[in-house]
Structure formats: C-alpha cells, structure tokens
Length: 245
Image (cartoon, rainbow, N blue to C red; front, side):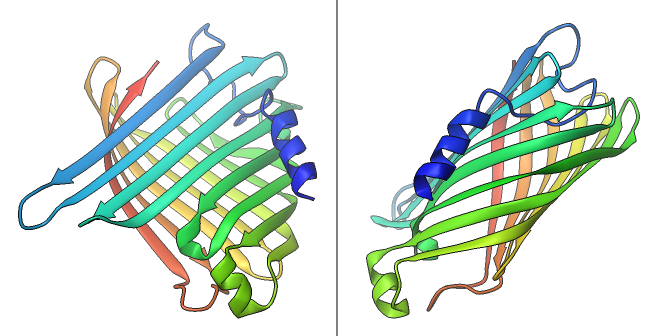
C-alpha cells in the first residue's frame, strides 16, 4: 500500500489545484509563494526555530495544479522539540467554472506524534460555493485512504507497527481580501475513518513592499485517538516572511 500511495503522489504531482478562474492571476500560468521564518535566542536560554513553506501553482489546460513543500524544526537547549516535514500534491480537473474533480496525495513525517510517517490520498468532487472579485469559498468531499507506520517505541507499546483506514475526506477553503494589501485565509481539512484527523489553518497576510509580505498563521492539528502518552491536539503559531512570484 505504501508503494501505491507513493505512486499516487507522483501521478498527481503534475495536476494539483484549487478551482476558480483566478487561480493564477493575470495572463500567467505559473505562480508561487515562498515562506520563511526563524527565531534564535542565546544566553541563559538557547532556542531556535525554523519554518519554511513553498507553494507552487500551475494552470495546464483544464487542470489547475498545486505543489506544496513544508517544514518545521524547533530546538530548545540542545533538544529537538518539534520536527515536521510535509510534501503534498493535488490535481483538480475543471468541469465548469465552479465545479471540479480532484485527486490528491501527501507524505508527512512527524516523529513527535509517534509515527515514522503518514501517507494519505483522496479523490472526489469540489465546488466553489461563493465567488467574487475579493472572496471565495470552496468545499471538497470524497473517499480517501490513510496509511501510517509507527516508530519502534510505539510499535512495542501498541503491539502493531502499521495502521491504515479508509476515510471520508472533506475540505473547506475560504479566502477574502481585507484591503488591497491584506487578506484573510481559513482552511479546514478533515479525514474521518477509524478516527478523526483534522487540520485547521487560520492566517492573515499583509504586504510590506512589492511582492514581500508578512504572514501570521495559527495551525491546529487534532487526532481523536492519539497514541500512548501523546496529546490529541497540537497548535502552531508562526510569523513568517512571504515572497510571491
């Protein structure tokens, strides 16, 4: 199954997107955003944290394609306190200006959850419920599949080394321009099968100068059935510089 989902990720990589005629603004067919944030302290307390994200968009005929790479690393007095890496791809085929079919896949590494990695994929139907020049609201729903491999410690505790589940996959994606130089975004993703895995990202972006902006984001991850000694909810607050191209 790992090979199947890995192949799905590679197959959908050329075809990832969010529906809408303004997916890539203007006459261009390719655009992207690069984010970077870092915090360093020395002296009585030595901490460091790094957050990076690369989000690419590509229009290809009736396909609107998006590619996502994301990484988070935190260290406190020589001990790693957070480490998360994500690669994702989704392909949307436009049927009309407001409806589309989608297929996606992702690979995530987050050892602090007790899993070595998580592979997931889904396919289904998406629809733009609301669309103006400044605001849009998209929803997606369809079946999916999640495969997770436990780390050695958790495998000994739980008595098994892998976990997989067929899930119902749903997405709500909202974006609105507050002013000509700022926007608000809210994205919620949920996968419900043997348990509920959900992720919410709320962000505010404000331009500084030209293509450079400041982004403030709060990310909440929820797992209804965490592994032994793990918490069900993780939160992440970031302030990053964002460059649009």
